[in-house]
Image (cartoon, rainbow, N blue to C red):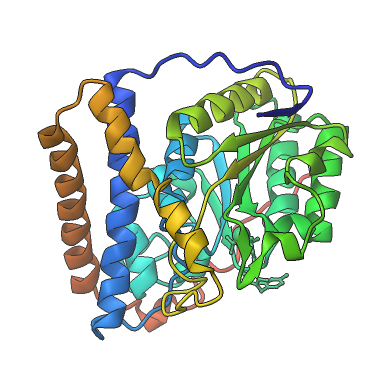
Amino acid sequence: MTITGTPPVAHRSLSRDELTWLWQTITRAEALETRIINGIKRGEFATVIWPSRGQEAVSAAMGLALRQDDRLVTTYRGLHDHVAKGVPLAEIIGEVLGTSVGASRGKGGTMHISDPSHGVMMTTGIVGSGVPIGVGLALAAKKRGSDRVTLVTFGDGATNTGSFHEGVNLAATWNLPIVFLCQNNLYAEMTPIEDTMAISHVAERGLGVGMRSVTVDGNDPEATYGVLNEAVEHARSGGGPTLVEAVTFRFEGHYAGDTSHYIPSEQMEAQRLLDPLVTFPRRLLDAGFTQHEIDGIRASSAAEVEAAIAEAKAAPAPDIAEIASNVYAEGLVVTHD
Ligand SMILES: Cc1ncc(C[n+]2csc(CCOP(=O)(O)OP(=O)(O)O)c2C)c(N)n1
Ligand SMILES: [Mg+2]
C-alpha cells in the first residue's frame, strides 16, 4: 500500500534462485532461533535472545535487496537480520553463547552483534537509537561519494521515540541514501500498538517530514522485496530516503521465556494463518517447486544451524587478555574535511 509520493512498485517475478534464497534465509533464521530457544529451555545454554519468529520474511526480503557492502543497523530482535545480511551462523551463535568464534570474538552478546565485513555496523538494545546512527552512516556515504546504501531497521515502538523523529527529519532534509525499515510486529514489549499511537499506519510518520513512505505486507517476502528493492535503488541513485513499514507479527514472547500471556488467543490464531513459514511454501509450490525440494531446503538449514552450534560450543571463551582489544579505535586519525 502506498501512503505517499512513492511511484508504484513494478513487481517483477523473482527467479527460481531468488525464491530459493528467500526460503533458505527464512528457514535458516527460524532454525537458528528455535534451536537456541530449545537449548535455553533444556539448560544447555545460559543466554538470552529476543525472538523474531514470524518476522523472517521481512529480513529475507531486506537481505535480497541489499548488497553485501550496504550497511545495516539493527536491534536486539535482529538475529534474523544478521542471518539475512550474511553473517556466518557460527559467528552469530558465538555471540549468543559468548565464545571466541563470535563476530565480536564473543564479547558483544546477542544485543551487540556487529560484522562490518557483511555491512552489519551495529546492533543496539536502546530503542530508537539506531536511527540517528544510520543517518550518520548515510551522511558519511554521501559526503564520501560512495554508492553504499544504509538500511536501519527497528520496531513500531521505536517510532514513538524522539531519536526516530529527529533522525528521519534530518535524512529527508539532507536527502540521504538511507532506507528506514520499521518491522511492525504490533507489540512493543507487552504493549499493543493501539495503546501507544493514534494512527493506522506507522508509515504516516514519514509524511510529516516530507519522506516517501510505504506500508507493505511483511509476511509476503516477494511484496516486501519489491518495495525494499525500489527504496534501496532510489537511495543509491541519489533520490533520497524512504520509510518502509512492513507489517508482521511476533509469535514468541518479547524475550525467550516470556509466555506472551498478554496476546489474545484469537489474535494469535488469526496471525498463525499468515505465518510466512506456512504461506510461503504454498507460494513455492505454485511457482513449481516440489514439496520434496521445499522440505529439503528446510532440512539443510537445520543441519547448517546444528553444525554452527557445534562449532560455537567447541570454541573457547574469549581470552581475558583480549578484554580491552577492539574496544577503542587504534591508530585513528581524525581529519576535518
Ligand atoms: C530507550 C529505551 N526505552 C525503553 C527500553 C525498554 N524496551 C526494550 S524493547 C522495548 C519495546 C520496543 O518495541 P518495538 O520498537 O516495537 O520493537 P520490538 O521489540 O517489537 O521489535 C522497550 C520499551 C529500551 N530498551 N530502550
Ligand atoms: Mg514491535
